[in-house]
Image 1 (cartoon, rainbow, N blue to C red):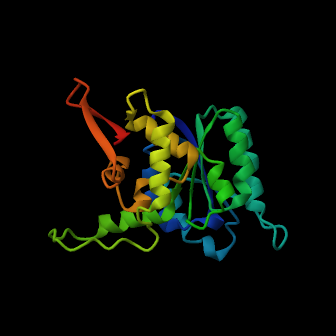
Image 2: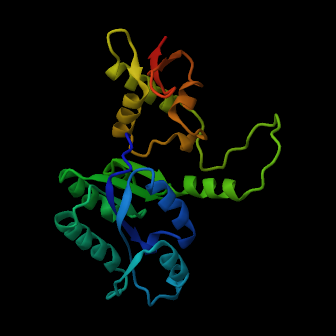
Image 3: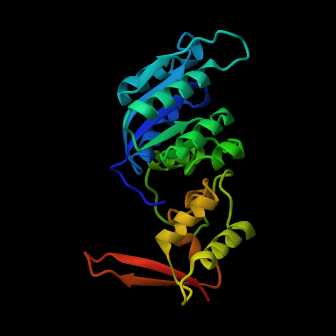
Length: 251
């Protein structure tokens, strides 16, 4: 997906579905896609389990929205978030929304926001139901952000030739991934078979919104492609500030 850090985003957080320890990584990730103009979090703040949020809310200028749990078993927090999202849609002047939750109840909301021409980013756990993931333009897993924070906090160590052990939540390059990449190349290749890497990445995200090279242990799409047999990579200079563009094709 092309990134435009000038996008104005409404960040709406479901406190019942997100840990306060993940907030720093979440907002660093959001900054890659736009600027938060609304930062709101919804929950029943009378509950003791949400007490850990106080310091985090102050540090990140997040506005808490109180929503009492009127009936046991009913999630009134979800309803409050959905209602306010629609209010922002019509009055807030934002370019997109970031819904931070792993709850499938927001599937219809994400679909409606996209129907209105807004970008929708989802952030949640790997357990997030497929319908909510599919309703977003892009979905990012919290586990990946947690891993990045852990790596930052670790003391630097000397590089060795030992293989890096990937966390259990990261998948390896598999047949499904190879098929996704190669079929996408075939879908949009020019007459000579070449595809601009940025265009390829956008198509893959449309097909699979939760696609992220970090899910497979790599930082960029080109790093994955280098490890897939029979795909050629051509690095072409643009003539501007030593910037190069990558093009790929199937050999």
